[in-house]
Each structure stands twice: as structure tokens, then as C-alpha cells.
Length: 380
View 1 (cartoon, one colour):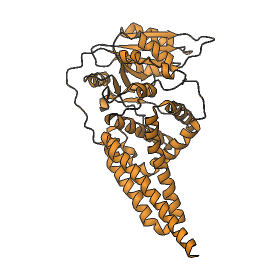
View 2 (cartoon, helix red, strand yellow):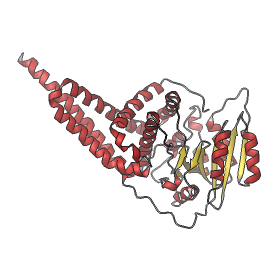
View 3 (spheres, one colour):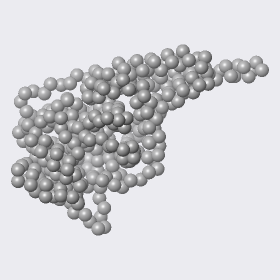
View 4 (tube, helix red, strand yellow):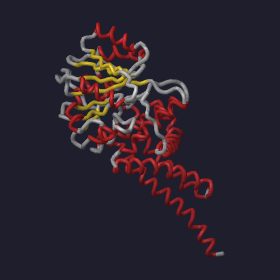
């Protein structure tokens, strides 16, 4: 009986001790990594625009409405020398005729047409590659047809980020705010993803970027053999390219508010899950050290919440210790997240942090697990 009592007395201590270990991991990521973005000082770009010419590359398939609304805002950027390469990837709507009309209005719009081949099925990486080959300038900027820059200074800011000789520029692309729970979840997940990849980039360990707002050089693309190493993976034209080619010295970030590029979020849970599953599939091809660091961060947070809940249910007499660890983590989160959310224009979500954070880690871990066994060969 005494041995049994001693054993049952050790179990809650082990459980709470495990919570403490996981808490240490979480505090490390918050204070060592994410604080980089939270306390990052935005650089001031000079009044004189950068001299280097830019090629903006957009791939589109059946995006007539988005192009009609967004493309003029890109073509009318306040920048002296740039071209826009629009890759029309076998659109079956009226995209072709819209582009013909816009070409008569904008001399710096260049269209690359891709016809569907009966035997050859291609993905977005093929379209991006053709766009890069058609570009006449060394410095490339990428976005999507459903994206719109926050201001006409977007290209000026991106060009300024290349000033130090960097070859990769990681931008930020938030989703527009709409009513409803799904929109809040999407914007928080986008914020958290951005906080992670931007912080790691500032830490000299860039591992991904987003194609909605991304820049790199043409020479880097061909020097690294383009997408050859992961052409078999449908997604990853953005994050896998950065993961393969980024170094501590060739990567910078560009997150000034004028450089943000906004996108429309999914409006149904099924569409959102399909999108995230496709994106999660690319992460399997990340460098091993990046997979380990991301898995450690995600799994430690997920297990922290699981063990906190189990401890409260099984051993409520220790609630003050468990609550103390949870509150400590939450307080540190607030110190880091509030300035980061202000920079990334989602400060309205801070009041929902306790709920959204739990959802984020539960969803990402579960979705990542199922993505390991799901194949998707479509980009549109």
C-alpha cells in the first residue's frame, strides 16, 4: 500500500514536470526566435527610388475577375523601371482578351501564353519558370492574381530591400478582414506562419517565404537549377525554393506596411483545409534541420496544452502550479505577440489569443499528420 501511494504520488509530479519541460521549450522559441520580429525596427527607405529595374511575375489560371481588379494596381506602381510578366496558364475564361486590352494601355505588360497539352500536365512551377525566362531584368518580384499591394510604393520597398546585395527578399501577405470565426482563424494562422519565417530569417536561418509577396534574383534561380530538386512536388514554388537557396547572408525581409500585399481568404472550411493540406505537403521536402526545429516548436506547444488539460482533470489539487505555467507562457506571448501583431496588421486578434493559439497548434499538428499521406497534383 505504501509503495502504491508513493507511485501514485510521483505520477502527478512527473506530469507537471513534463509540462515544465515543454514550457521551457516554448519560452525558448518565444524569447530567442520570435522576439526578433517583435522588436525589429523597420528600416527607412530613402526618398529617391532604387535604380535597379524589376520584373514582376504573376501566374494566372482562370483569374479574369481578379486580374481586372488587381492588375492595374500593380501596373500603376510608383516606380521608374519595371515590367510585369503575366503568365496565362491555359485560362478558359476571358483572361486572354482582358490581357490583350491591358497590353494596349500598358507598354510594360508582357504576356506569356501556355496552351494545355493532352499528354503533358504541368503545375505552377512550370508557369513560374516560363515567367522567369521571359523576364528581362535580374531582380524578380512575385505575387498572385488575387493579390493587391497596399500602396503604390510596394516595388520601391522591395527594390530597397535588395540594396545590400541580398538575393532573396521575404515579404508579407496578410488576408483581408471579414466577419466570422473562419476569417479570424485564417488571419491568425497567416500571422503565426509569417512571424515564424520572418523571425527565423532575422535569426540567419530562413526556411520559407510566400509567393504572394516574394523577391529573388534571376541568377540565383538558374544557379540553383530552378525547381529541379522538387519539380515532382506540386506545391512549393515559393517555400521550397527559399528553403533550398536561402543562406544567412543572402536573405532579407521587407515588411514595411507600404510593402504588404493583401489577399482574399477562403470562405469555407473545406476550401481552407484543402489549401493548407496542399501547402503542408511541401514541408516534407524541407531541409532536415528545418523540419526538426519546426516540429519541435509545434509538437512542444501541442503537448503543453494536452498535458495542462490532463493535469487539471486528473490532479486538480495542483491547479495553482499548472495555472501558473499557463499564465507565464501567456504573459510572455503577449509581450512578443502584441508588437508583432501591430507590425503585421492583425492587432485586432490579440483578445482572441488564448482560443486562437490552441486552435492553431491542434489544427496544424493534425493537418500536418494527414498531409503526410495525401497527394494533390493540382495548383488550380
